Image (cartoon, rainbow, N blue to C red; front, side, top):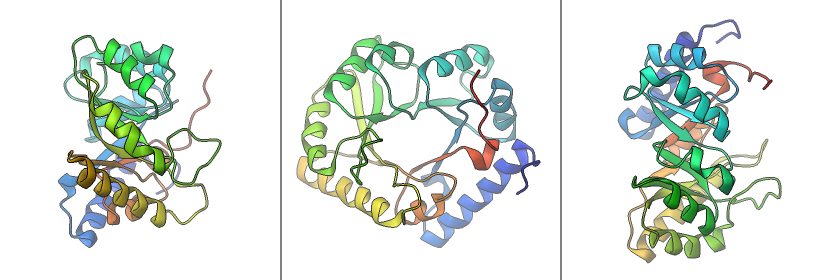
Length: 231
């Protein structure tokens, strides 16, 4: 797909690749949610992707999410928003109760803040797991995931749906994707809870992620093209 291709063409190409990856993995395409990562792209780009068939959109910055939701208020009910970046507690009010899923909760304090700010809504969340122990990334290490899982399961106002991770750049992603799936399976067995969501896989590695059991893939560049610079 060339850089000059339209968002609609890119979306259709990704949809076809996801369907093919699911077929190879013996999975139904309905098992994988494609999140079109629209961060730094204008609201018009989201509108174009939605017209092409995209439903789920991911944002990394709380204020940008709030601004786009307001600008695209006419699409309410037709699209779902996800918050996929690291969220500061003082920005939780812009996200809680406004998105289908918060992908990167890495502390009890943030989970409590989301519950507090959800204003009566039940906010679904994922725990971010930093399997590689990268200092530049948020997320809990694998050994701390059980304790955080137990704690979040006890917080009214949030619903823990699963786990997310990002492999190190330029590394083989498969061990990290398989590692997250195994961690999820262990937590489900040991804690007796359902954690159906695995958020893993981006433009460069989503087919591997699907083969490893991902339920939510986060696709930015392959749909929207090169990221725009923020003003």
